[in-house]
Amino acid sequence: MKIITINLPEKYLEAIQILNDLNIYPSRSDAIRNALHNFLSDELKMFEDLDKESFEMLIKHNHEKK
Image 1 (cartoon, helix red, strand yellow):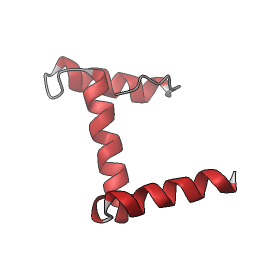
Image 2 (cartoon, rainbow, N blue to C red; image 1 turned 90 degrees about the vertical axis):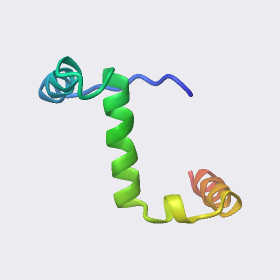
Image 3 (cartoon, rainbow, N blue to C red; image 1 turned 90 degrees about the horizontal axis):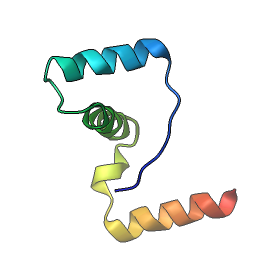
Image 4 (cartoon, rainbow, N blue to C red; image 1 turned 180 degrees about the vertical axis):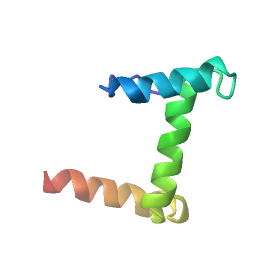
């Protein structure tokens, strides 16, 4: 896993902290990882359906465009 730094609106951070305080998620990082997983599953249907080689090819193609 890699560590990243993000800026969040205070309201989001407070909501994530509440989920952590209620022991719904063991950490804020777990809550954010779960939210990102759900986002990627919803927004990028192909994310889980693509075989590794095809997915890596799309990533490479996207980086070359930049």
